[in-house]
Length: 167
Image 1 (tube, rainbow, N blue to C red):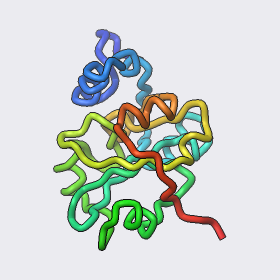
Image 2 (cartoon, rainbow, N blue to C red):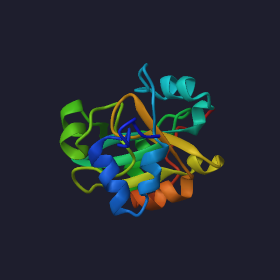
Image 3 (spheres, one colour):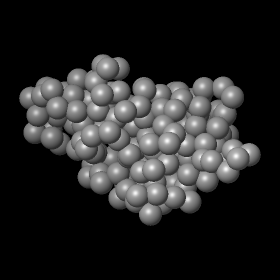
Image 4 (cartoon, rainbow, N blue to C red):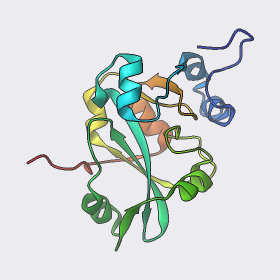
């Protein structure tokens, strides 16, 4: 979706990343909501989709180095599994300033790609359970739909199993 003057609703940096990747048409599919889509639950409610159809873009610090984890909205990241996947000694959730410094976006609006700096990306296999997932388009009010395999490829992600196991 675009504004009345024909510009994309996606954040300008993210819209440029889409064009660079040859995915410019996705910027036109972005949807902006008056209420926040900052959390997966808020996004799913606004869109009218299942919580698991939301793709969360989460930044962690693995031995102090930022790493992006793409996770379905209904699941939580298992830090031990991320640590094992990366061969890291310690993995913690990144603080807001590191998220903005690494990605160029604020928490709640971080898209799955198009970041300020290049980071290692892990995508949880759970994203493949849907034909389409929705992800942030650069701000906490805008999301866009994308086929999960395309999203994982565009993000340069390694497909892994890092979600918490349910008991």
